[in-house]
Length: 296
Ligand SMILES: C[C@H](O)[C@H](O)[C@H]1CNc2nc(N)[nH]c(=O)c2N1
Ligand SMILES: N[C@@H](Cc1ccccc1)C(=O)O
Ligand SMILES: [Fe+2]
Image 1 (cartoon, rainbow, N blue to C red):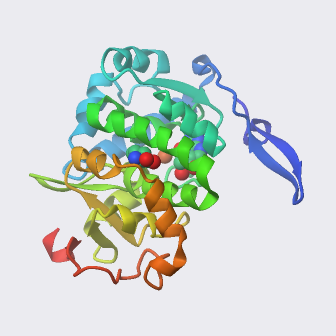
Image 2: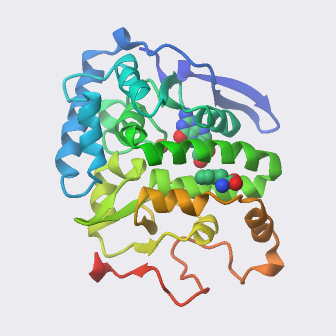
């Protein structure tokens, strides 16, 4: 198995040599996984499955089972792809790690989901700063079997290609949408508040914190507010946005964002503090859509 040092390539920029991941699509080197790699998958899979009972949206366990994912071994992308092909038509592709944004968007727009092929080391069970195979497969892939969510992901990719051609600020706004939905989203269900964000379901600590802690805000999904809310990459979120259904998410994001990007870029037309820290109470509106911790 390759080491982190071999995985990255370096590029000379005005900041000196900086690491960049290769954008190549590769074959998942399944035979190269060590016993330790499979054990890491197994440990994380069992731990999260136990923790997520009554916490994750029901699609997670249901769809992991449809995929035949289990604690036994790291799944083969080719097996998962057979299931995807017959349902929503998505395809998993193996990559080394984070892709340049535009490349990532182009894959999503073509219903291809990039999955990091390598898994974290045993000493990184609780935290690592970049996506690995466990995060991508356990966290993202189950919802690709949900037809509405699958369409949302594709629309997001197409929206990303469009935003990239508009302005860097448009891209920042759109990236926040991904962060607060696909990565850190919560959903109201008849059984109660549940997690659907991949960044949460793949994290032991945040699976508990996002639902059980009184500390974070849990706010009804509001597209404009999401686009104005900065996020944390180094700690648990201070704010989670709650959707009522994947259909709601799809409908709210269906309109052309071009006028919205223009309005948000026009500082004069938005209230002071329009770029919100995630713990800032939003001033617009009447507080409708707020969820108090007591409601959860
Ligand atoms: C859209 C998202 O905010 C982020 O910019 C992209 C960049 N490239 C990526 N590349 C991979 N492989 N996986 C990802 O989740 C992302 N996220
Ligand atoms: N409607 C968005 C595209 C999009 C859909 C879904 C999620 C994100 C973006 C646009 O016009 O840009
Ligand atoms: Fe992710």
